[in-house]
Length: 431
Ligand SMILES: NC(=O)c1ccc[n+]([C@@H]2O[C@H](COP(=O)([O-])OP(=O)(O)OC[C@H]3O[C@@H](n4cnc5c(N)ncnc54)[C@H](O)[C@@H]3O)[C@@H](O)[C@H]2O)c1
Image (cartoon, rainbow, N blue to C red; front, side, top):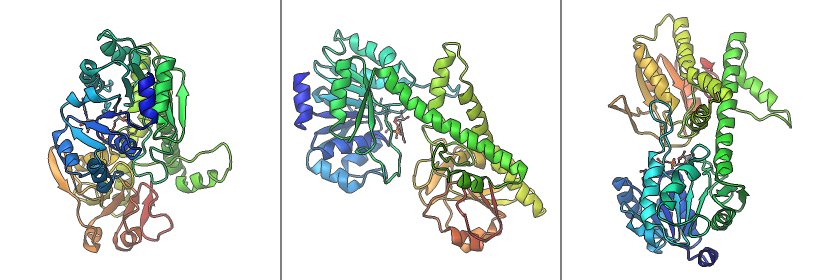
């Protein structure tokens, strides 16, 4: 413990990061920036090759920074896990998706733990960052390590620290987002707090791993439920003939007790639609029905259908049907200014439109091509001709890069699911 403490404090602790994606790569860079030697591991050979060439695939990590770290000998990437043995601390940042049955898929966590276990040595610290249900670190990861005959809190340290990365957020990054940490034992909490203190301005130690796991699920369930609430408000306002966006703006002037959330064509991203389901699954194993999570899930899942029915309404006014109409979708990424399309509701809308016989194209400055139901689709250029050719232009993701006054000038009809064309004139219908 003393050696690890010293190594952390003097910046020589070697950090291993397993999973070099949206979470792992920025974290690896943050430790490298503080002078730590960082060894990255990923099973995706293509990603590792790109990293070794100094090419970043994560927009928040500039390639120049990656190259600098490699040249300074502070970062390396590998597909083989042998280098883990030389690490003093190992941080696991692998995906935690859902299975088709909506059950948690913790196989990536288990695979990573199994890669660490044979290389676990006395004094090592292992931290899990992947979002999962309360109990994951203690019930799934700890036994894999303790089967090696070492004891957590004494021979090695194990903790959970939820990742809070918000891709494309220019204001908050690793250094200024407080980091919650909870260990298997108080000693584990202490040493992991010390580690994160190297890269985060504020560390928030909590009682145990379960508390840290649950804190993350509260944060993301809070968002999912509030988005569900505001989506229901959008459905209500539509029936009442009221403008939900103006209402949110008015309510937001209250200086206390209100926080704005915005409606949209559905929930997207790797976290908000997925994480609450981890908690829901866990609670069902304990015979508890998580009603808020389920209700928000039902409302949020109904939004793509609502968006499509609003587009059908616009076409109907023009004496047209969805079948055979041309729809130009603006935005395939799940949120503005990112290249990530995971769980993007644009796919759900696209699917519904195609099922109803519409001819759909898309434009997204961040997503040059996507794979949709096994076939590739390419982003079309945003030209006056492309805008005029569409019976409806549907704004599904409000990228700031898109020239909305230009869209408003040339499109015949616009369905704006994000209030991106606020204040602009044109034949615009808002969600
Ligand atoms: N992306 C976000 O905004 C975000 C925010 C907060 C929390 N999280 C959570 O962080 C975790 C990681 O998410 P992400 O967005 O970075 O995922 P990602 O898909 O961007 O990256 C994960 C990486 O792990 C690699 N990987 C998978 N299995 C592996 C294994 N056994 N060994 C080594 N590498 C392996 C993958 O190849 C991939 O490169 C998830 O639990 C997620 O819920 C993500």
